[in-house]
Image (cartoon, rainbow, N blue to C red; front, side, top):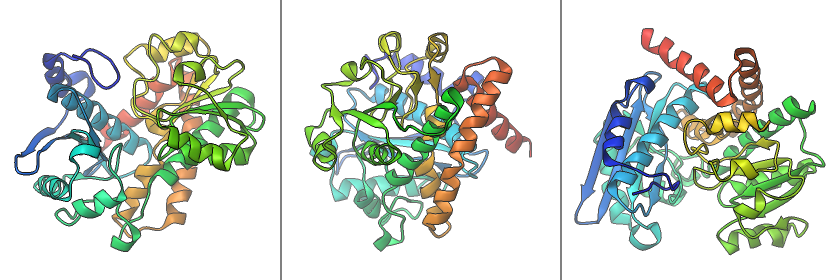
Length: 366
């Protein structure tokens, strides 16, 4: 049995992840089933120390329920750290709906899901993720007031991918500043794996900054959307080819997790990894492998926080300029993490964890 990153999953390990004390454990996991609509979902709350748990809903065809639970647990924990480092008064949560959204997603299923979220009474605030979109959140919101990522017509902020990409770009600029002394990608070769909801916006920022961009995506239409508008963008066959591009300066994983693993890290040609995908490190220890190869890793949950900044703001009356100003600070946060890593003699991923854990611990003591 494996999870979506290809890593083996043992059902016993799922329970260990839920209760393990060294990472604080998870506060609550809810298994949801509605036979009438075919809904099977998992809602995981990692922490509410800083406030209501906030995180998106992923709709994905998991092979087993154990894989779905494992993914929800990992994603929820990541949201706790992401929200803490983004300076938000929110804990971390995540939900996954099991199934192929193109096959089973219906209005009735989304409404049933909304009722389950509402049953938590505001402890979990949901939003979009892989497989769910603004229109879906509009439906969920009909049964659940704690829904963000809605359309402007329905009181929401719209697509959070815009600021997610903007934040990743700020993290990339900070990485360039740290490694090359200049916060620009001008003249640099940047490879983007996954040019869907977030990736195609990131490509726009990179081209505007003067980067030489390489892309790949499993969906041909996503690549074509880029090349039709920007014929100068270079297309490679797949991620395996992208990470081996000669002279690549930056690698941006923007699809599913597990992109950095025992197979990919040894052959990476890039000197910086900075992308939008969640849970990029396939397992503990990969961050050390990157450091040993001299590759600067910008922690994923730090640089991809623009989207959650946007949806969190939606709860207080959305203001795009206010959100963009907060997302711009991802540049400074990333620089601070690199500085802390150097000071403590640890990889940036560990430094980011320490800073986030400190904020959550202070909130619990308070």
